[in-house]
Amino acid sequence: MATTQKPRRALRRAIAIAAFGIAGSAFAHGDVTPQAVDVTSLKPLGDEWLESNPYRSDAEAIRIGTSAFNQNCARCHGIGAVSGGIAPDLRYLPVEDEGDEIFIMRIRNGATRNGRVYMPPFEGILQQEAMWAIRAYLETVHVE
Ligand code: HEC
Image (cartoon, rainbow, N blue to C red):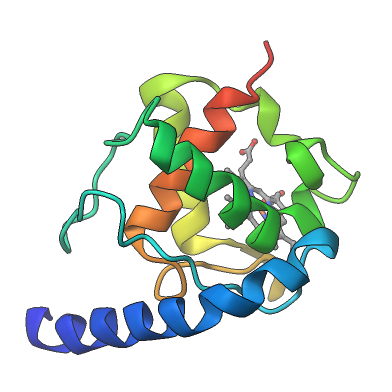
């Protein structure tokens, strides 16, 4: 496990850096292809999956998460996390640990029912750092 993950992480990081320059142009309309996220300015989290957000309220994570959300999630969940109607409105996800648990399960596994993919899994596509950055952003737009 560890031996295969290291090179994959390195590859993803290289892709993230390469994609960083072009990501801006795809931003406005919410791209269909998953977009790599540059997480080099965040504290690395290692290979163990965490259950609660290590970046909660972290300004840099929120900055990265805002653009990562708009590039990877907004096409279904709406710009600014205001649902466009085809997916749940993520502003209503519970805050803190309760919401973290729902969030990380869903972003890693996606949602497939009866062979239909409602939401693609992001494990292996986004780094754990990028996932928690998105979660940090989502908590800033939470409504009760
Ligand atoms: C292709 C459309 C699509 C994309 C892209 C997508 N989602 Fe989803 N998402 C859905 C749908 C549809 C559901 C509801 C699934 C169900 O009903 O089982 C969902 C459910 C969720 C849930 C659970 C919400 C709840 O109230 O239980 C979370 C959290 C979530 N998505 C986060 C994300 C994040 C973060 C991203 C970007 C990394 C993302 N999604 C990208 C379509 C999408």
